[in-house]
Length: 208
Image (cartoon, rainbow, N blue to C red; front, side):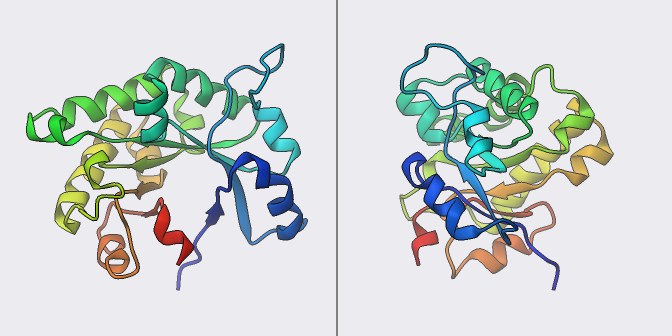
């Protein structure tokens, strides 16, 4: 079997303990669920990329659908965070995805292209190889609804085409694109059998 990279993303307050439990050479990598784009300064309550590195994080989730919808984080803010993460040696797990209204309105390709172009603005092709893309169909998160494997594959292939335009075909083929729309034990194998689905961004089902 091909080895998989496994990453866990506990809340900020649990990162230090998780890092301690994982040890010096962890088989499971550590991620934060968010971070500030500011490297340093008077930003009370914020967590910088350097802080995350100090506590043992190798990855950081950026642009999660809840950050976008509940906290108003747009592509320009997320882009600043992607730059800051890469500068600090963290690997971003960049989340993108469309709402049900956008999908039903025929805007899926436009929305995902805009999110990718905006969030990855100014990132060199070589640096993109360190970025993981997580496709979250917002309408399938926590609703019990899941895209069919065919629907998910179609969107992942679209994402890879856009990445090829932003970087190169070689880089786009190397980038991991995860599916993040209610992946569960009973649908994971079928989803991950699709050629452009390279893994999963698992939410509540990770607790089982």
